[in-house]
Length: 292
Image (tube, rainbow, N blue to C red; front, side, top):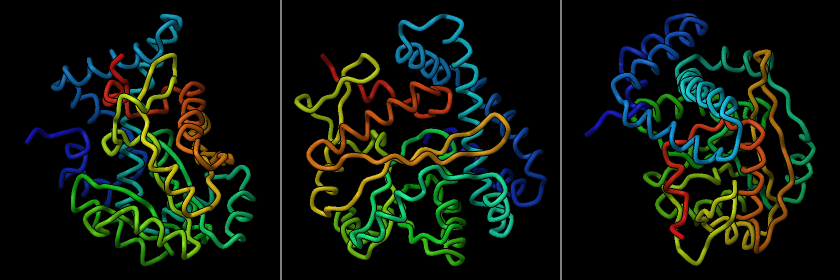
């Protein structure tokens, strides 16, 4: 089986480094590791470059080149954040969260939970998404996260940290029917976190498309079913990396109903358009595009 970037970054040696060495050193090391990976995986590197250019079609050439450069840095930063959140000890993560993170419109979550129907938080592979569960958990919110891990070591490390917080990690392997599990979480008035751009899980159909970034994309309507049956609030959730080393969690209400999935993807488009370098699902961009 081909070694992908995620598994490459999560080797036993790298896990040991993140447990023992200074985070600043680990950050620099991860940037170097990413460059080494793409030196030997030029086909994947070139695919990402092509997809960035395709999404940004019509933009100034200098902007495209700079975005491409920063997008690769963002990909490597994402894996640093994943490793940091999994392999640093919980007190260190908690102190980091309290020192570096702020939440805009936190009242949306507070008011939503008061309704007693649970809350759906919709995010994407954008910004410092790996830190969203820890930010909400440190704040004391009851959180259920839909995720898949590339390695058992990562899953075990994350699961171990849930003993400190009221967080559930939901995978297809440990939940069976994910939709029923999601309804159960919401019925227990929990926050359910999911990603709207998880294209591997989409049911892609030619008669179900949406126009975003000037392209025709597939979209999956599972979020419509979930929001309608649960009759609960839906909140867009995007964690921005700021230039000064801080982070801002942006919360925005998403109108729920028959158009919930489209509304969520349009919000995703908004954040990617504003900061395309903070999106890191570039390798799968063409999977999102519908054949027309």
